[in-house]
Image (cartoon, rainbow, N blue to C red; front, side, top):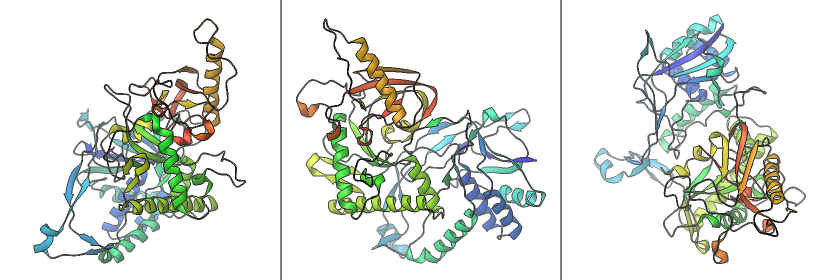
Length: 508
C-alpha cells in the first residue's frame, strides 16, 4: 500500500531558510530536510537498528511527490545576533563567562518564514505538507518509521514546531509537484559520519553543516514539470558595495572584468566550464560560467541601476556537484568538484588582494562587491528563476546571427521583413540553449520591464550598451517571449548570455 509522510506546522509558520545568504524560506520544504529530521529523531531515540533499516529503505526510494498548502512569504530582515564563541586564526577559543559579553561580536542573520493557514476543515486540521510515495511500505518498516516521524518536533528553526506522522492518504496527483531535492543511497551513513566528525572537531571549531540533498528530476514526459533553463539556480551573489551607482548598460564590461580576473587568479589548467574554451582552444559550445548584473527593474520608480553581481553555473554542473558532495566519485562528479574548487580558489585570491576575503574590488572599474546577505528583491535568485509562460528581456539580447533585411524602409518606418527576421532570430536563440520554441515573440527597442534601458540610447559612447568583443557587429534587441508551457528560469539568451546580456525576467 502506498504511503505518505504528513506534516502540520503547529504555529502556522515554517521557519526554514534555503541557505545562510538567502532571505526566501524553503517552501515547500524539500524532502531531504525531512529525511535529516528523521535521522535526528533516530539519534535522539537511541539509534535503534530496526529504525536504521527503515531509514536505509526510505533513502533507496525515488524522490516523493509533494502536496504543499499555499503560503504567504515573509522574507527575512537583517538582525544581528551575538556570537558566543570567538574565533582566532581559525581556532575556536572558549572564553570565561565574565569575559563573554565584552569579547563576543554580532553576526548578521535573517529568519525567513512561510506563513500557513491554521484551522480545521470539518473535523480534520488543515494539511500543510505531504510527501507521497507510490511504493508499498513493508510491514516490518511501518512501526519504526511511524515512531521516528512521531518524534520529529521541528523542521528548520527550533521555533518551527510540527506534528509529523505516517499515513496512507494519497492526494490527487494534479495537486502535487515533484520534489526538487532528495537523498541518495548511503545518506544515513553520510549524516552519521558528519555528526561524528562534528563531535570530534567541536573543540577545534571545525563543525560543519551537512550538505543538502541532491537535485532530482521527475520522471520523463511529466506534463506537470515545467521546462527548465540549462543554467542553475544556486547562485553566488555579491551585493554592490559602497560607491557611485553603476548603470545597467555596463553589464558586459563588468562581466569581462570579473571573468578576466577569475581566469588570472584560478591558476593551472582551467576546466571548460570556467575558461569558456574547448579542448581545441576554440570557444566552448556548452553552457559555462555566466556573470550577471542584477538590476533594480520591474517596479514603480525602478532606475535600472546595478544592485549586485551573480555567478551562475550550468544546471548540469550543479547537479554533478551535489552528487560529488553526496559521495559520488564518477568522472562527471569529479570534474564538477574540481571546477568548484578552482572557482573558490580564484575568488579567495581576489578577496585576499582587496584585504577582505568576502569582498571583490575592481578599482579600475569602480566596482566593489561584497558577499553578504541582502533583502533586495533584485538579489533574490527566485526573482529570476521563477516559473512563467511569459518572459521579457531586462538586458538586450545579442542575436546569434546577422540580419539580412534592412531595419528601415525607404520611406521611413520599420521594415516588416526586418521585424520578422528579428523575431525568427530570437526563436533561434531559444533553440540554441535547448528551450522550446516560443509561440509568440515581440521584438522591440524597449524592454517590457520598467527601468530597463532601451537598446538604442543617445549620448556619448560610454553611456550606451557595452557588448563583448566577439559581439561588436551583432544586432541587439529587447523581446517579450510567450511559451506554450511554463518555463523555469533563469533564462539567458543570445550570443552575449555569459556576459549578462539577454537576461530575462518573468512578466506577471
